[in-house]
Each structure stands twice: as structure tokens, then as C-alpha cells.
Length: 535
Image 1 (spheres, one colour):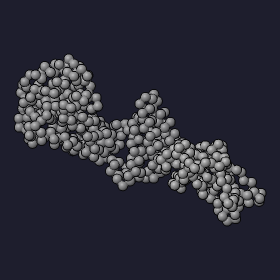
Image 2 (tube, rainbow, N blue to C red):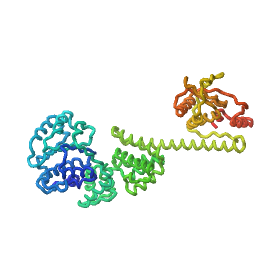
Image 3 (cartoon, rainbow, N blue to C red):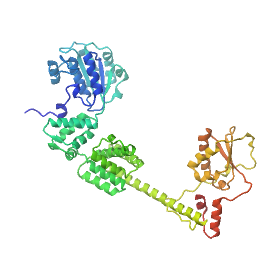
Image 4 (tube, rainbow, N blue to C red):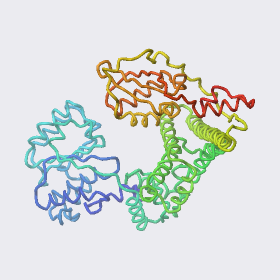
């Protein structure tokens, strides 16, 4: 009885045409082989399972094939057959992780000096080349720079940043892309048609997503699912792989949106009892939060999600319960949780704490919005009474979550007494623009500067305001002066120290607000200073 062969080995591509989703690489290599203009050294880089080693093996066969077909190996000549069986001494595969010393490289250099036994070229395929030591790279450097005409090198690595620049500059570099989920799903369906099992579209897509761009990982997962059932559906994938399933993720997202920590924790407990991997579930949760983020940002392009149509509808419905800011906060919290779970002893507890914090934060935000809404409603009622009767019928106190912070003490030290020397001051032409910018950050104080004038002294860096509203002197603080100084710097392009001088108008008129509050006091309605300054 023949030994079972894993799917990723059985269905390993034999020609460049079989390689999935790397046409920019296979087309170039085929053209070089057809024109006999191949390089002496290649460097293949990319994430795991994207076809680097497979492509290197096909290249080694193609350059030595006795009857190549459009740059592809014929797979029929003795060279192709022996290469596939691993019986060719002229095609040497080396694991860079276990052969990373200087002595191994010196041995390689000695063997490379010998002529090929049967092939046209002696091809060295060095996998995980980034694992080689610095001394090994130095020993290999001269051989790569000036190899014998019958020697070719193909290096493969997943961590290109660890390969010295001296090696990179002597190789033709090819970057292998992550394989898209739809390409992986198509390959899975193709293999299923030639095997003794069937795969649903949803199951193929789920495997493709879990593979994260690697075809080898996808075929390993498919092999695992085929051992569970010959009819592979979505439930089969979730059972075989141990993932929680999209419905559980959606339930937790709904619980976060509803601020229902209890429902989220109940779902986590159920998954834990089913021995689901908490780290993998947290990662799935972050992936779906990413989908919600994309729906909020680019709702018209659902192709960015890489999800099935039914899942897109569910995600669109859940997205309506979130704001973009809320999604970003949740995504950041879950990603941080994933990082902590790699070091934590109790991963379930880490996930539970994160979900409780998310539900509580959203509830707190909801409470803040409600308090602000109540406050605005109370103020609108006050203004309506003022317009209708001239005095407020009542000054209700709106509910607050926290007491209002005390205002800074008036900055009387910023006031200039006496008559200032204005001979060195020039009028500020853009003063109205400065006040507009100040109004964006401090409207309560900027309103008191209406009708004021400003003069600037560039020698001592002082901006002097002539203010008419007496209430300004009581309310203006060091904090307000700093904010006004920043607004002036943004508009005028220079930093000034703020000073003010109170001036009297020809006919001093009390402020309208002072008149209203005075009338209110005359009718026996008590108005505090805090309320009078807050209108």
C-alpha cells in the first residue's frame, strides 16, 4: 500500500503555468529561459507558502530540460523525471537554517568548482538564506560575484531585511505577492474536483481567508478538513480547524454595539467550553472590525472586505450600530489584546477584560452624549424664556456627570494701568481674523472682545488690546491669554505676549446679559455668578 502524500506535496506546481497569482515572476523567468539570458543568481522573497521554493525547483528543471516548451520544463525527458525524483546531483537544495556556517559554504564552493555531471547547469537552491551567518555570507560573496559559467544560485527567504546588501546587489530580486483569497479558493475547488471530496464555496473561501495569503497553508487546512468529512462545508472547516465561526464573532460585535458586556462574556464562555482558541478568536474579531472600518470608510467598495455576499449584508447591518471613531477604538483595543495574549498565562481573562472595557467605554460615551444633550436642551429652554418674557422663568440646573471645573483666576497682571506709550505700536490689521481663530477654541471669551482694537510692538513682542467690555477683565485668565497668543501666532506668524488696557466708550452702556440678570434679580430670581458667566 502506497504511503499517503499530503495535498500540498501532491499538487505542487510542476511548471510555471501552474503557479498561482505570480505572473509577474513566471513570465519574466520564462522569457529569460527562452532567450537563454538567465542570470547567475536570483533572490526570491515573500511570505510563506507563496511559491518561492517551488518556483526555484521549476527554474532548475527548465534551464536543464532537454526539450523545454516556451520556457517551461517538458516533464518528459530524463532530466525532468530525475529532477522530480530527486535523483539529480546537479540540482542541489540546501537548507540555510541548518547549513549556515563558514565550513558548509567552503564545502559548497569546492563542489561548485566541479563540472556538472549530467546537466548543462549546476543549480544551488538555498532556502531560508537569511539564517546564514555573517561569516557564511562573506565566504559566499566571491562565488556569487564571479561564479563559474555553469553554476547558478537561487536564494529564497521570508525575511529579506536580514540578507546583507552585498548579497542583494549581486542577485536579481523577485518579490512574491500574497495570494488573494479568491485565487486560493479557485485552486481549492480545482483540487477538490480531482480528489475524492467536495468543497462548498463558503468553505473554500473560509479556508482561503484562514490561510492568510499562503497556498501551502490553505492545502494543509484542506487536507485536515478532508479527514473530517468528504463533503466539506463551513461547519466542517470550523470543526476541523478549531475556529469559533463568524456567527460568534458577529454576536460579540452586536454585544459591544449594545453595550451588553454580559452577552459578550456568555459567548466567550461558550467558546471556551468548546475548547476554541481564544487567541485565534481575538484575531478573527479584529479582522471583522477591520471589515466594519472599511465599510464606514469606503461603503461603495465591498470588494475590499474579501467576504462572502451574505457576510457583507450582516456586516453592513452591524456597522450601522457603530461610529467610525468607535470602530477604530475597538480595533485598537483588540489588537493590543492580541499582543498581550501571546505573553499572558490566562488568555481568556485578557479577552474578557478587553470586552468589558469596550462595553463600558461605549456606555460612558453614551452617558456623556446624553448629559450634553440635556444641558443643551436646558440652555435652549432658557433662551426661549428670555426671548419671550425678557427674563428667565427659571434657571434649571442640567444634570452633569462631573462638577464643572473651576475657572482660572482673572489675569489682572496682564492689564496695563495708566496711558501706554503707543508710539512704538502699530495697528494689527488682521485682528478680526485673530478673533475668528480664537473664537474656534474659546468662544465665551472671544465674544467679550467684540469692538476691541489691537496694536503690536515687534521690538518687545507685546500685543496690546484696547478692550471696552468690563466683564472681560473679570473673566480673562492666564489660560485664555495663552490660547489667544497661539491664535495670534497662527495668523500673524509671530509669537506675542498678550496685554490689555480697559477703555471707556463715550456713552457707557451695560451689556445686554447684565441687564437681563439684573431684571431677574429684581424679581427675586437668584442667579449665581457661574450661571451668569455660562450663558
